Amino acid sequence: MKFWRYVICVFAYICLGVLMFTAFGFSAQEGEKSDDVSKKVTSVVTGKSIEEIDKLEAEKGDDKVTANGIVRKFAHFSIYLLMGIFAYIAIFSTFGKNDALCIAIALAICLIYASSDEIHQYFSGGRTATARDVLLDFAGADIGIFLTYLIKDKIFDKFFGGMNYGKNS
Image (cartoon, rainbow, N blue to C red):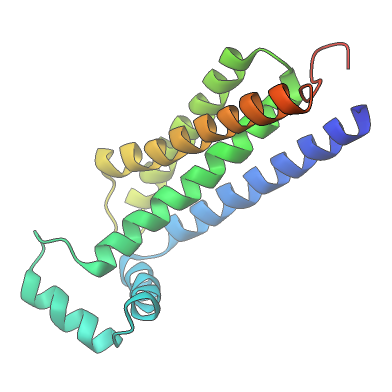
């Protein structure tokens, strides 16, 4: 079991690093470039051209919810949901069975990264940093961590006799 614990641990840290690097890359994009990327995704999702999306956004104004805005927020949420999953797996496979400590460390990692990512984004041209985005990112991480905990706790521990990640494994 030690071999698989090691494999899972390394895989989780690699995935976590890739997600952090990806989030950093998106945050480093200037506002116009970031908006272009999300509009392309919105175009694919909605089946509308980028010109139609621009027209709809101009009609609605800044204070209205747009498909492009939803795509941008969903991207934030999704990246941090995955980050939460892999942070919990990495920490749990490193430190063992203390679930509360593993959850707390994974939450702290995700909150610190979300906060620092927003600060980094603030220094990219044409971008802003908002507490709302930090909370959205952290909500995604929370859900990822707790879903992973529940799946591990309910499926592996109950049906398969646990992952045997205690200090003696």
